[in-house]
Length: 617
Image (cartoon, helix red, strand yellow):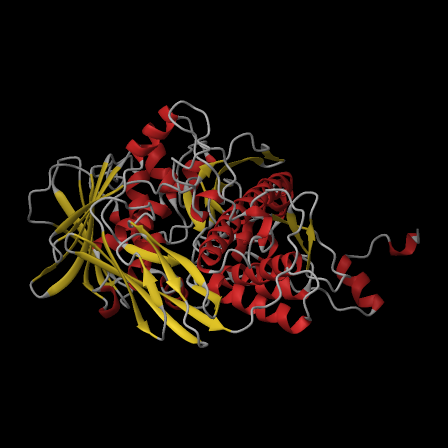
């Protein structure tokens, strides 16, 4: 060290080194009233301003809070009255309104928190100023130690305030805040909307404090009780505990059906500060953005932006929250993926049922000898009452509609029980099987009417049937029976057959088209396929293959390539996906049944089957 410089001052050293001394000072408000105006107008949501006034009542230990919306002397008003401790009193026993009006940004609740008080919300001392976004004047009334009522009046845009005695009986204690007249846009703010907002905004505060909040809408002549908002879906248990260096985070999460309305909110001390956690950039990712979850997360240590109290300061507390939620995020993603797989399986089952139902209806309408896949149209014999199969034809055969399921017939007792619970209702519709067929000139063909009720159960009682040819040539045998025989003419043509079914005053009709021709398409030899019923389907993701589907005869399933670009395109909508699967079904079944036919005839069959099937989707 240079001993010659040991006696120099800091200023002399800086001057000698050529650097200017640093100018230091303290920030000050240049225009106090301008600062107050900025603060007062910073709250953009009037409902949030109302919620802050209600929170003041809860912090004052109120047990009952009443919000009244009405009109008096031609002016719309909003009043919030509670039975809490009231405004703190001064040395003279009167409500210390002067302290409230002259200590903006110096909240007494912040000092109480510093002294160890808990459960208080608010620390900036600016909540009262938010009345500027609701109305023009605020009148706050509270009682003194002598139970006399005093009021303070503050006006929007006016730096002054007035404290006067109030000539009214107000001996119940507590505080009343009255805002009037309301701003033009606030007059339409209904009591129901205030109720819904407070139920979500103050959900946990209401539950923890036990306060009763009611909204009286004198304009609509209705009264509402503010109950904590209940979430929809299944409450998730055994979630990871969220722990941070600044404290624990409470999470209440519900798994719901996917919907754009699903949100996970961020709370602080029981008050909602962020409606949708995914709106924050740090949380705009799964699981919060997947729209499967409802609920909220309460992080008492995060810091709010003082002006709006609807934003977060992205400081160390915010970083601790982001880090602490990561294990919870991983667990929730696993839960949602499990839910997605279950939904896909359920959707696949529903699609399969819809496809098989549509094919059953289509095959009933098509000639059995041409579409006899997997012995679907094979006649099964019902067991007799004694339990043995009736080989003599005494019992009626099972028609195609019943034989599709491939399920054994029930015993006699089960059959009676089924008939009791599945008793058919009144006639609702009728179909003809087959609804489209080809008959050689001079040939014969049997057609059958299938009357059904609204639930598609077979109707058999009190029926009157009448068959007729409404267009074309030909003859009918047994025109009043459920089954009729068509005798084709000697010349080719198109015949339209009609059946009318009456059940008392209900009339249903159906038609069938018959093509009479000299030549029939060559019938292929029946394939040696065991009776398995209509196949199911499964997915196999092979994006590199151009094949959309293949038939697995061993498992009797159609394997669909869900990596194909057409499947991805069709999956954008449920109806489009259903039709895509139906066309793949039609393709595989036609290829399976009509082995060896020319490509042109295969395409004709596929068009025919697709048309009949999509009609019943």
